[in-house]
Picture 1 (cartoon, rainbow, N blue to C red):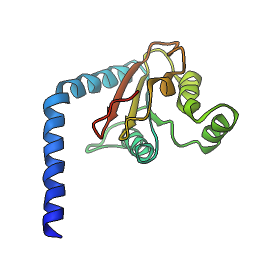
Picture 2 (cartoon, rainbow, N blue to C red):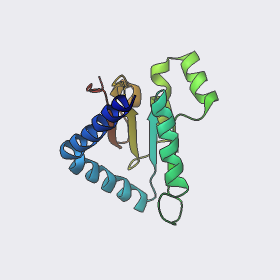
Picture 3 (tube, helix red, strand yellow):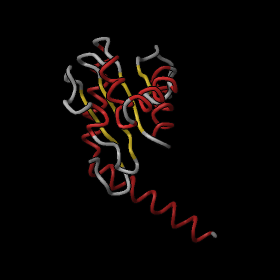
Picture 4 (tube, one colour):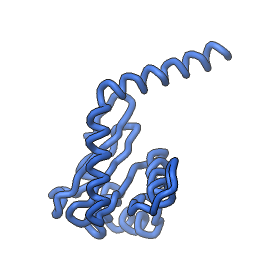
Length: 150
């Protein structure tokens, strides 16, 4: 059992170190874009499926409440929390439309959209619809398991 735990922890450390090397600069640039959006009264919208939906909710809570220091609340929303909206869109249209319809409904020019997917199955079409966004928001994505969003 000790070897299994140690192997899992070492692999986790390795993945994090590789992520920092490959994506550290992009992560900083994306954080700066989010900060710029907040300074002009725009919001961060966060989404994901399954466990990534829980991550989206947790991240939004950290922006709205606090993370590491006392500060005023920041405008962030998880697009994964309104079960009536999600199920009505899924029922009347398609599960693939649950985020794009919300982005179209509440998104404004200058907002930032962060999509989280560990499976790599969340596609840009799912986020923005067939024609993309109408307001030119900034998109970011975090994906895992060696796959890129389709």
